[in-house]
Length: 107
Length: 120
Image (cartoon, rainbow over all chains, first blue to last red; front, side, top):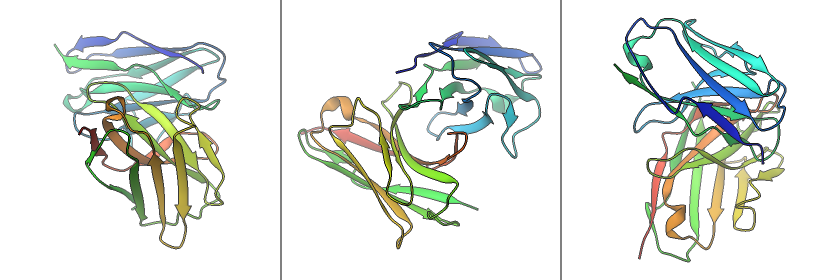
């Protein structure tokens, strides 16, 4: 299985901050990398697919980049509704695997 | 607007089989562009992909669960289902059904999830 490792595991930030979360794959996955966020008690919500394509309806303050093994999710200006747990997911090979999550908290 | 909804028991006894159904509304399950799958999340932990099915019946399972999992589809009811046998406490989790884009593998629509507890 391909292992996905996110950093940091948790992060404290303020409204308006620029935040970057990193995801590293244990082997090359091209651009088969997706980003989600999840709020307590809710299902994950797709933010970015194919490493850098913004899902329809997702605000443009979210962006993704990377290819191969190293990927980043950037939130340009944090809004109150962005405080959640973020997951990356590789869809390059079966089984699809997720990172362990990055918990983004209000400072 | 596409909607997915999981249904099934919230409590399962150890060694028994879990059966969950995902009902899809607002769109057809018989689409060439999507897989339909299951993901689970133990309380306070991360996400685990269980498996996916295409409307034709082709299945893809997580090898770690493959010996215990069956996913099937009923296109006439616009539903797909999950069976997981030999349940143990380690299978206690919120179970989500989701639609996966066939080209990118991304899950763009999810059900709200259903908590399944394994306990006698």
